[in-house]
Length: 126
View (cartoon, rainbow, N blue to C red):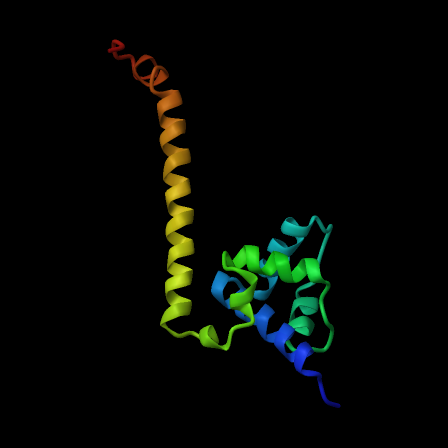
């Protein structure tokens, strides 16, 4: 049984997206569900997509690019295949962006609680 070049490219693109996102099959399935608004997606379906057994719908490919935080064209580029320096840099950039977002949210939460903190600790407000 032979697979077409396009099926192989799609399978590779999905596997690349999951790798770039740094997610396991189960977490990637959950992320796909959240992104495309599905109720559920079994991890074995993701595995079938990555092995070219089943071709996923187009919205899944777009979601995979969003989850990996890369343009969809990069998922089909052989230049970033595997775990080379470009892949690691893309993952690190995504992680840094996530951490920066967390810091902003935490900072805003602390600022919102600041007037309450001295009173809760029994200290005079400044």
